[in-house]
Image 1 (cartoon, rainbow, N blue to C red):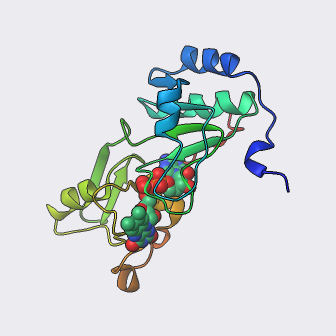
Image 2 (spheres, rainbow, N blue to C red):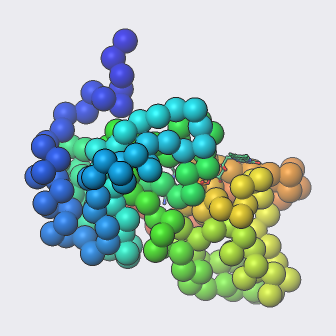
Length: 183
Ligand SMILES: Cc1cc2nc3c(=O)[nH]c(=O)nc-3n(C[C@H](O)[C@H](O)[C@H](O)COP(=O)(O)OP(=O)(O)OC[C@H]3O[C@@H](n4cnc5c(N)ncnc54)[C@H](O)[C@@H]3O)c2cc1C
């Protein structure tokens, strides 16, 4: 049986790397050491990525998605990498939002909402919310290192989800990057 993850047609990494480096301010890495770091998550699975991007801004993230789409290369968003089913690994370009995209932009205690970037660690959000007597209810055991982006990807839950719902139940709106979105 064909491996779906390896069936994507690809351009040479040198071309892809050049275009990513031109358009992105964050880290663009294709060296074996970095690839090795992103070959696993918390699962038993292994997939060596083609490259790794660590965007500094949301615009860098959008440029990475667009550039990979132009080259026919899939992207793998990655937060804390704590997934246990190979969710955060793949043979495309891994986009790690956990390093720089960690801003808690706004907490509205009246509406009981928070606006955050995807790389925010759950415990950091919970600590900020606690100043207003609030919390973010879904609480996976990895709360000290998992990110909100990864929680959305997995629809993460926890012991309090029984009372207050999963991550999907606690999302008001998402800004989503699509591969075919206009620049
Ligand atoms: C010991 C242990 C205990 C756990 N306990 C629980 C538990 O109680 N409940 C539970 O639900 N899970 C649990 N998990 C699984 C995992 O920790 C959680 O689901 C966690 O929320 C994943 O977050 P992460 O930041 O590590 O995501 P990652 O593993 O980095 O990514 C998870 C998924 O989200 C996608 N993703 C990441 N960032 C983005 C983004 N910005 N945009 C779009 N997609 C994105 C990834 O591609 C991947 O598919 C556990 C794992 C371990 C190892």
